[in-house]
Image (tube, rainbow, N blue to C red; front, top):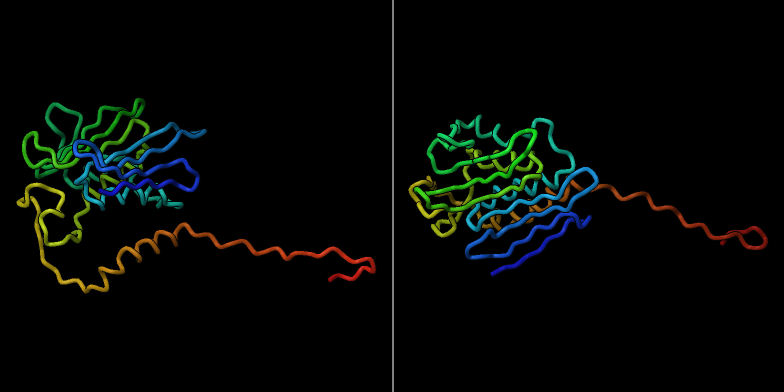
Length: 215
């Protein structure tokens, strides 16, 4: 089983992949800074990778877009999620996922996003600590409600659910060259947005000789 630890260049953020049979597999933690408290986010084994990537993309984005949602509930409201009876939570229209939140604007609380395929049968859960920046949680809920299809292999084991009936599959032939270059293209595009041009080199100057001639 893979175990991976990635650190941000400033050593403030750590992304840990450590498979645990009964725990969260992915943990993203960020140290406290002068203007913010420490925070964390974690994701269960079957959390769709696109949702985790939405959080890490938002975290590493040097220039967040002005129209990106900052309220985690906003994408859910726009997608028709409904209030859960007797709880401070929203439930998906097909009742396979819920997002409870115990906090307020003055006293933020933790967020728990859970996908299920039946009563008390969770498939995966994402957790966001009390001080997690709201725009990162909003990036997750926006990806969660994104209606665009996502590529998967034709093996049920690769789907983030125990119940194939809640998934609509459409076979599509994809050229092998596109599959082989998908990761490389993604890495290149993410690196390009953070790249800065190197500074112009300063020409070295040799000290003058005794007769004031330079070498």
